[in-house]
Image 1 (cartoon, one colour):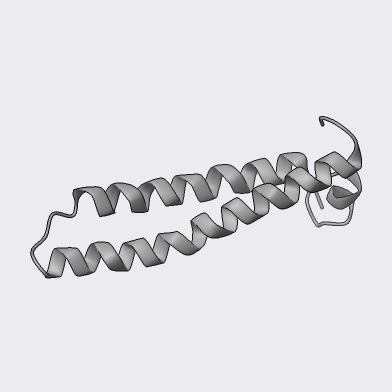
Image 2 (image 1 turned 30 degrees about the horizontal axis):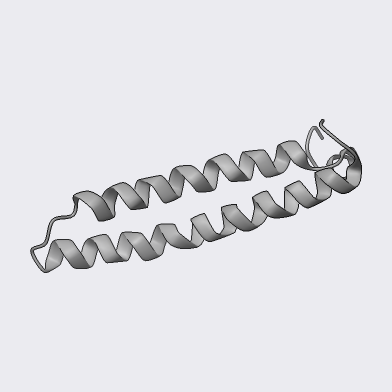
Length: 80
């Protein structure tokens, strides 16, 4: 784990915020892609943005877990 607990906490919060925005973007962009498809538009870019948002959500959620201080890990059910 890099840095002090304070640094890890701040990084975990930052990663959590980015992940949350990405996860919110997935259904919004998915609905927009559906709308574009139903109206006869090109769905290439909206679909790519939806997949990109999904990938970003997963990556930043995993980074959030990486940067969590050790005392957070011991308070969860991981490994039990």
